[in-house]
Amino acid sequence: MAQGKKGQGNGTLLVTTGRKPDWTGHHGTSTVVNPPVWRASTHLYPNCASLKDGTNHNEDGRFFYGRRGAPTQWALSDALTALEPGAAGTVLYPSGVAAIAGALMSVLAPGDVLLVTDNAYEPSRTMGLGILKHFGIETRFFDPLDVASFSQQFCQRTKAVLLESPGSLTMEVQDIPALSAIARAKGAVTLMDNTWATSLGFPPLERGCDISIMALTKHVGGHSDLIMGSASAREPLYRKLRQTAQALGHVVSPDDAALALRGLRTMGIRLDRTSETALKVAHWLSDRPEVAHVLCPMLPGAPGHELWQRDFNGGCGLFSFVLKGRGPAARERFIDALELFGIGYSWGGFESLAIPIDPGRNRSSTTWPPAAWDPADNLGIRLSIGLEDSADLIADLEHGFAVMEQK
Ligand SMILES: *Cc1c(COP(=O)(O)O)cnc(C)c1O
Image 1 (cartoon, rainbow, N blue to C red):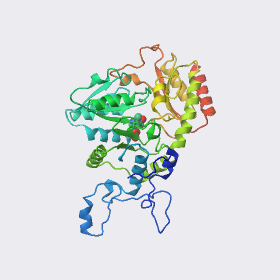
Image 2: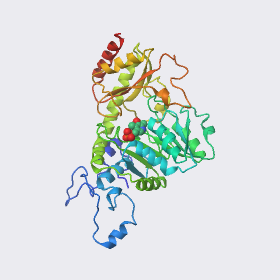
Image 3: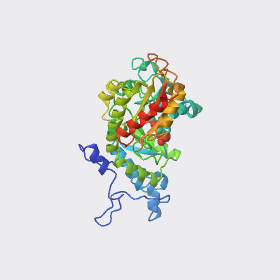
Image 4: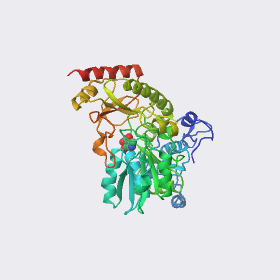
């Protein structure tokens, strides 16, 4: 049901989608630009016959009851579907984690095995080892870069694979077309956490995946003021996602949907700008004596750059780097000295952030730092680059390094 004419560019789509006149409050021939916030639990019917008929229709755009959303949420789903090549529809969830949980619960049953990339977002890992285990689903972790042995990870019971590229914190780029082709041949559903690139930078369904998941909290929201997630798929999986979400009572508030839709309108230019600034900062860091490795897929020569260049249409401001032989106190001095970078979780907002990362705690089929590195180079920092000027961010980092070296 998504709008958007074939062949139009993403910039145009970002502006025009999700603005059906029915949702923007048409009055005569006039409408407003944005769908208003439709606050509703009860939807009213003209008579008992139409109340009864309501149960025969279960799709966005049909009034029924607030748990199935109303025009503000439908407009957001519609826009996300238009931007996701190959998708039949998009389900919204109260957080990115809820989207991952809702999508996994749509495709898994007790006794099944789930394969999860070893560099997955930590709560995805915890979900596998915690609640999914509790419901009789076994989670196994695989090396994100080992395509050659991937097919050996499957058994009769393997029903789904959770991919994420670049992976959380350490930013390994996976060969998604190769991994998803293997999974498909084995009869498993592939889900991809595509929060980093968004559908503008990487179209998972076109690259062989079955379900494309985003934490809208990050780039779509874009202003560090909302939590939301989405999952998009073709039929018949979209139906399954929808049924599961409704069974679990997943719904998002119309206020947050309106904020997400507002964020979406400028997502393209924000991604372009933060990618450009991140690349400048990454280049600068790669020349610093305090830095051992820059883990930024957009940086020529960085790990995963070739795959990123082959498969992605864009990037974003999120990347990590590793200090050269410094200890935890030095890392803390560095981060605490930064003035333009906030210290906090999440990313993809208009403002820059920095956090210390210790990914080794969350690995089971791979090790971090990689064996090929000097083991003294093991303390990471993740940056989320915002919309500030690159020269100011670089000056702030330079000041941080100066404070770091004062013993
Ligand atoms: C933040 C994040 C999520 C979860 O999103 P929330 O809205 O915070 O639940 C999922 N995947 C990745 C890669 C993330 O960075």
